[in-house]
Image 1 (cartoon, rainbow, N blue to C red):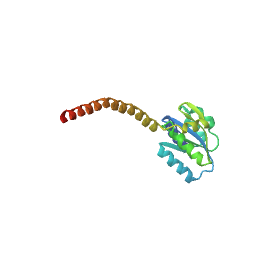
Image 2 (cartoon, rainbow, N blue to C red; image 1 turned 135 degrees about the vertical axis):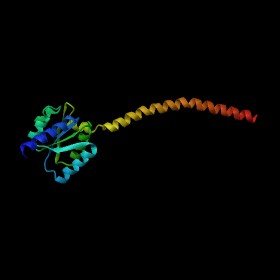
Image 3 (cartoon, one colour; image 1 turned 90 degrees about the vertical axis):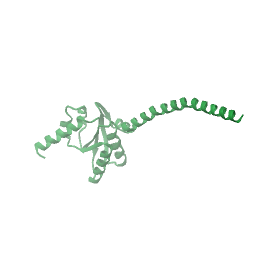
Image 4 (cartoon, rainbow, N blue to C red; image 1 turned 180 degrees about the vertical axis):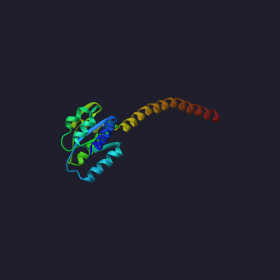
Length: 172
């Protein structure tokens, strides 16, 4: 890889990290090409990305981003997972690491907040942004339907009472 390719790679990674909310740093040793491909597919399906990095180039790409404090963790065979969704990258990386001992979570960052491996695993247990939105909409709609049901119940009961009186009046 010549100098211009390295500069392009650093600029591309830097731009990707500018648009990222969650970054997960992993050590991957012994993963086969098929395993890495499977992980990348799972990441892509979740709206995240997974990239095997050269440590020196990754440190250069981190400069000037909110993840700059993580540069000391880039030692050994590293790879990063990142996403705009605050939990997508962590969720897929932790799930894959639980099934495969060749991938180890080292740490990461949620925004400017640095997290250790336990913090990333805790982040992975949180529901995704879409799930939280669905729950919020459900919570907002539930009281409205209950209020409408309560407001309609007296009117319905009144209509039934009038209907009963009408029937008794006709019968008489």
